[in-house]
Image (spheres, rainbow, N blue to C red):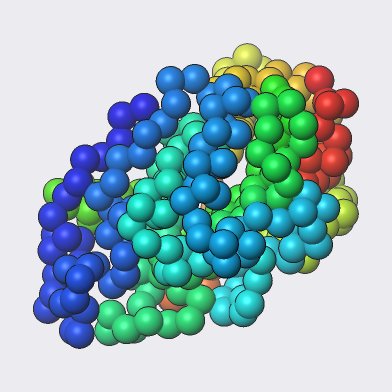
Length: 356
């Protein structure tokens, strides 16, 4: 996996913009921000169960006794269901990135790169860096910024027996579960604010394709299909987010059974914006399952269909709930995005070993 090489700290966080931060982290607001910005993780050649378990074990082994006790939790720990993106969350299970040293942070990055695709790791890296832009005058705000993301491992990492991990903070909450070759990513929250920032000379867009792929799909519909798909003239709200475990919305919108070949290609591309955060073997298995549900899938759109409009959308099938919505906080809903990916049949890996 090719990832960005180190960049100049001042290019992202000029000292003039962050008063009082000229310390051992240079121009970065925190050590996690520095490591996420400059470290290229050692991703495995293949995302095998053994490689994932080894990366998790290496991360845990880098911790001292106290931090390891915080990070390594029982597989059935109730902390799994306590994730939320609302800061400050307060004391919680797992270790806070801001409490780790540089070596430990590098092992955390290696761990994330081992259990996510290049697309998924880019989100896990860039979304906390975007959150750093929400710091007030460069000063710490509890619950905001890369230092206030938390990483937990549930159960003993293994190539054959069940275990899980959680990486969560203000705009990202990944719940990954593993059992041999089987893997799931439900429930997961993915958001960003701002929607774009500069890292060195590069423009970084943490959620690169979730909107564009959706516009291509909705604008491929004919007039009759659009009438059914557009369920409201204005953007709606996510309804299956944190704290809604077990909740399944009433399906609404257009049945995807009516899609022609080109529309199904657009739908597939949109689904991959979410499912593609998983490593390729797991993503391919999940996509095969979802493509087998297309005739049971519904697509709902809220708002205008012109690109860069204030919109939300929902995709739902027996084993899928995807929601995407702009947010009013901050004044520009195109610059503050939330999304949710869920499999109501397999929350926290409940069905691993039974799924196709």
